[in-house]
Length: 315
Image (tube, rainbow, N blue to C red; front, side, top):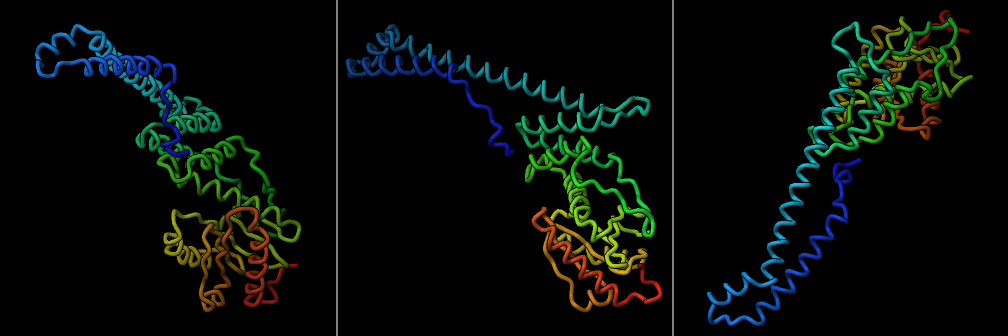
C-alpha cells in the first residue's frame, strides 16, 4: 500500500465548526464592506472592530489555531505509539540476550505488516524493512534432503508454516515501497518455486537442498539429475550479471548432469553455452508458468543426457 493511501482523513465533524464560522465571518464581512464609507477608513475600521464580523473572523482564527494544535497532538501521539510498538516488536524479534525467548516469527511479521501499513514517512517504512530483512536472515533454512537414490524430499505445495505465510503477506503488501525487503522477497520466491517444483511429481522427483549437489534443489528426470538454483535479484540487469557465475559454480561443485537457474526474469543463454554446460535459465513468476517450467526442466535433462556416460545413467 502506498504512502499516499495511508494518509489519514480529517474527521468531518472537526470541519463543521470551521465551515460554519467561515460562513458567518464571510457573511458579516460582506455586509460590513458593502455598508462601509471607505472615504473615512479610520472611522470604518473602528466600527468594524466592534461589529459581529470582526468577532466571527476572530473566532475563525481561533478555531484554526485550535484545530492545528489538535492535529499536532494527534500526530505526536500517533508517532510515539508507532515507535513504541516498533521498538517492542524489533527488540523481541531477535533478542540481544540469547537467553531471552524471541517472539514467534509470524507474530513479529504480522505486527510489522500493520506498522508498515500505518507508516507516515519513508523513515518508518525503512525501519520496518530493516527488521524484516534481519528476521528473514534468521529464519530457519529448509532441511537438507539426500540426493538420489535416497528418498524424495517432501517439499510442501503450500505455505503451511505460519511465519512463511505472514512473510508472504508482508511482501505482497509492500511491493515498491520503502518497507519492501529484497531479502524477504527472495525467500518467499524460493519457497513458491519449490512448491511449483513439488507439483511436478510424480514425473519429476525433487530433492530439496541436497548437501552434495551445491544447489537449492535437484530434480531427477528420466535418470538424469538437474541441479536447480533459484535466484531472485532486484532487477533483470542484476540477474544478467550474477547468473553466469552461478552456472560456473554449479558446474564446478555439483554432482548433477545438467544445470538450471530459475528467476522471475526472462533471459536466454547462448546456444554454445547451453550446449557446453547443459544449462538453461527458466523464468517463473507464478503458477501460470509451471507448465513451461516442466518443459524447460525436461529440455535441460535431454541436454544433460547427451553428456552423461551410459555407465552412470540412473535407472
